[in-house]
Image (cartoon, rainbow, N blue to C red; front, side, top):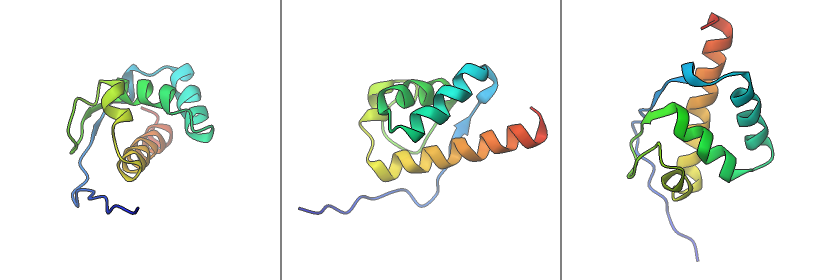
Length: 90
């Protein structure tokens, strides 16, 4: 059975990586590469302050309740913010 997943057109996320240390960056990259959704959901909850989905982004269970396309949008947004942080040095 296939189901169409609606992903909001306007993807707005408020992401703050300032609380992450090198350990969290390392663990996030590893969790994405290893499909470790439990660890990823914990780390997402530390940096995503707002999202266009239902539930509290700080709650790992809310992250795990997302559809895969929604999680991919968050991963892209976090990746873009990580890239910006590394290139701008903050």
